[in-house]
Image 1 (tube, rainbow, N blue to C red):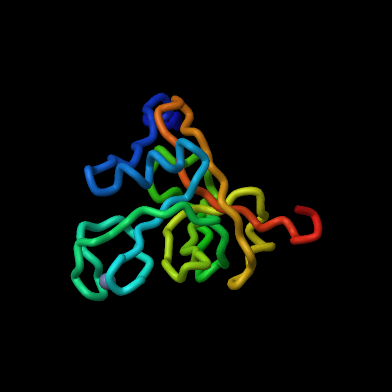
Image 2 (spheres, rainbow, N blue to C red):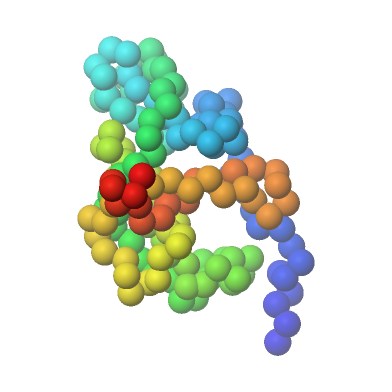
Length: 146
Ligand SMILES: [Zn+2]
């Protein structure tokens, strides 16, 4: 049976006033995180107040985007019909160096090569229609090859 969703565009994250700097950073090839000026805590997802001390003195900082795989699942059934072309989907929670957890998907890795704790680096993926840039992750190149 033909996929009735085949010609529909995939839904994109909607930037809010609070999250706009994060999405703008991705378009410029940078991962940007908020950090609390009062207690120093790194924050993700973007918020108006620090989840640690409730301060609203949060500032944006560019970070490396590097981290390790905290956990993952390989979805053989698409999580939405529009993502059928991406199956198996390699859904991941990535722990960045700063300690925050970022939901994402893995690219450039076979499902059976995925290991919790593996080093990851960011991939800035322009969406099919070119409207935005999504943050994905792939296995980090070894330090000697950088
Ligand atoms: Zn704080």
